[in-house]
Length: 263
Image (tube, rainbow, N blue to C red; front, side):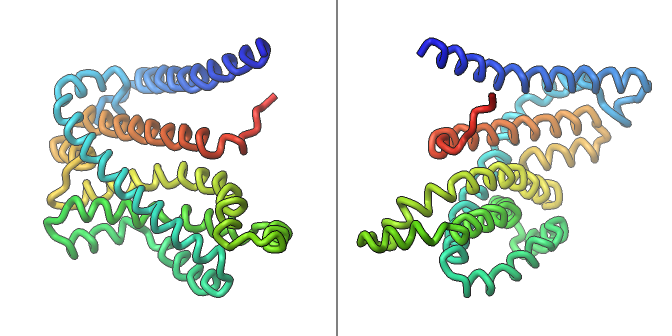
């Protein structure tokens, strides 16, 4: 028992310290690179240029950061609902999988940067709706595919045994299919989180009524405030990391059994 607790503490410590150390190394190398090349801030802002930008615009970072975050989360939730539904349809029906896969692949192949202006013009003034829609459109594909693959590769022996024992289709889903797809689902969620942020910020930058961190970035570009632009990029990275670790925490709760502890 004592040994297992010690191993657990070591893993937790490693999981916290390793990313922190990597971030420190990244920041130091970034600062050294800028200083060594003598780059001005309009070429490459250094980490030491960012604190003044945060101090000057801290209220805007709080307000617009929240706007970006909640729209991204809503778009991601919609992507989960629609992606899981489509994945289940394709996973349980070979006909629907053959019919829908080409459409999904073709839609995903379209650069979303070309879709953003179209959506912005279609729903002029509805900035919240536009932003959520793009976040959803850009992030639901990996979720749908992961659920579809997880269900379609379910071993038929399990289904046959449970059916022989009198289990219903819903029982087979809850007892076998759902647990099997959870690791693939959370793996897709980790990808979808970053994609949702990309969609949100594309719309915030392009839309004439844009708000959020993307609009703040565009304002910095318009005013040639390059430290502000880099500060926005770091803020977006921080929000993405936080949302990513929310997904990791949910994965440990609902699919922790699938994790293999490294030796």
